[in-house]
Image 1 (cartoon, rainbow, N blue to C red):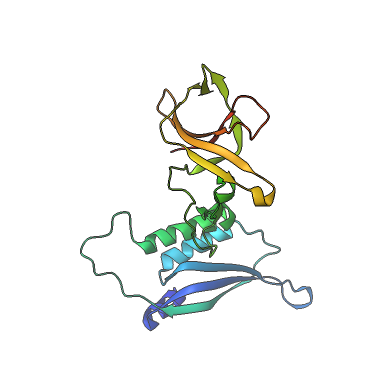
Image 2: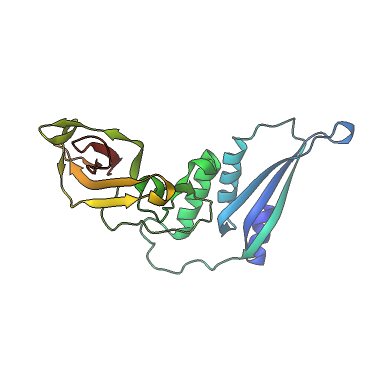
Length: 230
């Protein structure tokens, strides 16, 4: 409360704080446990800071009993004026979105809250990259303009053939033009595939590819499931 009162008085917003949990002092002194909180969006709101600290505290294993607390402000900046828009934005503001992500990171850990950061590569398994929402990685547009799913399998699944059609629960029929991928030669991992969007009898769409004849020793091309559409 003292911190947020001071921020409000100075018209400042905090972006980085550290809560120090002090333990035994003197001869048997133990170094304080530090809980660092870095915010994506500056804030002066007490409720948000308290929620973040509560989430972080639930994941802290204390080395000893705590005898004192110290809150250290490491970085502040001028607070932005509140929006004077008559109608609120649908789904909340950018600040609301940032606060939600901060809360998720505090609860689940930065390594478990990810965002897409595709790499400029024609090979889907290389292009599909996910990083922590706290990472400062620039977004790179996917290499293809044809539909690509959000969810890729860790490894493609070879599909059975039924009546000259790939089969996954039901026979699959292609509903898109093909996307030809020929890449990886310069890295010694050549990929020669034709990708298609395929639809099952229950109207679920999958991303499948056919290995081109000549890329493998088989006389017939092999089909694989590589991704799922939402």
